[in-house]
Image 1 (cartoon, helix red, strand yellow):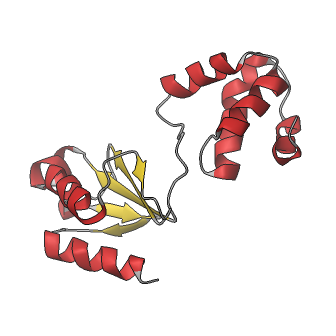
Image 2 (spheres, rainbow, N blue to C red; image 1 turned 135 degrees about the vertical axis):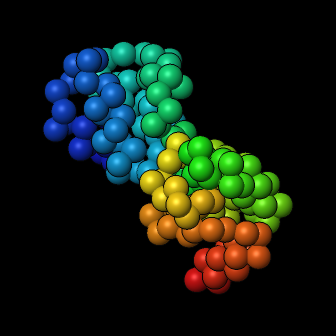
Length: 150
């Protein structure tokens, strides 16, 4: 097994622990790479295709390396009604990214989340956990510019 994934040895090497192992990999890497799939398959004694099957079934796992700045767009009921679809459109126009994508520079990635718990402040996004509320296009452009210049 690749030394990079030696932390898996803290988990019993039983196929029933695959999800726990994939969670550990994602916590370490931020996503599950092809190398990680092969390492997990070897460690848990199962074919790589079975690991892929688990990854594709559970939405919690990311197969694309996230950007330095991870943008989560809330699409809960309040945010959806107050403009989450517009926020996605603005992000597509400004960054060229749809949910689940990362830009070529590895700076930004975009995902949709069910709720950020800020319903009275809709629509909202979070960037690496920091919440931005009552968004309009002008504010969003300003926020993105600030992150791009960091």
